[in-house]
Image 1 (tube, rainbow, N blue to C red):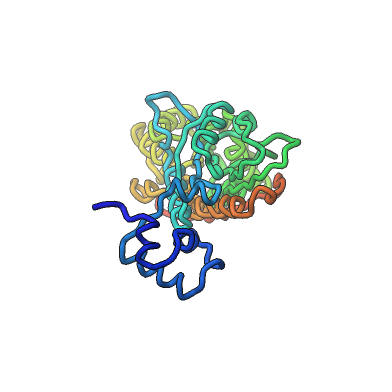
Image 2 (image 1 turned 120 degrees about the vertical axis):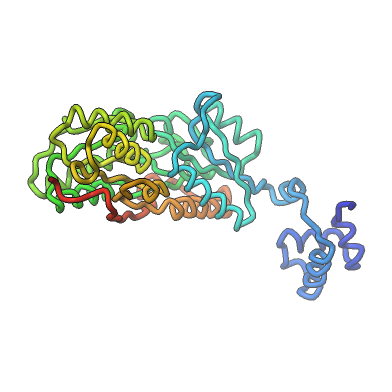
Length: 351
């Protein structure tokens, strides 16, 4: 079936091609309501689909948004974290509702960023998964609308640039505090903190700070010797469980910085004869699907990953819609996504 064109719609409606273009592209102020309604009727009847390239040229924007994540090796998947997958899905849904498209791109440095932005003429970017040090090295274009997820860096465009940047992040400090408060309330004082503490991640740093603040508030001593560094995968959780069983035999609880890590911990502890929660309680972070799929189901700190993704998309499109002259430098307050404790079967009073 031949593609229906603007000329076809214009001919049938008895108006100019420019009139049809104005209606299709939302410029209703230039067309009478009666004419606009007739054009819309014919568009729906004929199943006309606007040409994206032509619309981009007419509007001066592509309606294409990039989601930039750290590039791994050629054999690595870009999205392996349940958190990242959930956020990406929410970003895409929110963009689609406002007639924008998402391009997922792995980038390693400033050259990769510039290539992606210029080659695809992106209207803006959402940046996710980078440590703050890595963000500073990306050197995002000064005038590029940008939303950074889970960043604590003062700015990603450089100190002198008129950055058009917003930040969305989880209240990580409060999340760490809630986890510790729960374990302290149960009677645990010998608690292990497990997560990627050897990286430059301020997310983990803030969760640890919140965790420690609860112990300080209750005047309970807690030693950095109770930190077990680990990456946040299920396999790493298995290994960390074995280490905790052998290196921290007196510990009665563990706080893991991600649910997938916590799930691996539960299995790893069990493989070494440590019952959860009879001998050791485990608290995770995220409230990902895996939290309810493991046995025992995980007590965890819930963060609203969907809300985080939707908010990132909304902020970005607001920046894009505001135009090149708007935005300003936003290096202060971030949009904080709240957290809450979800108590399930993986925690209990110490033996």
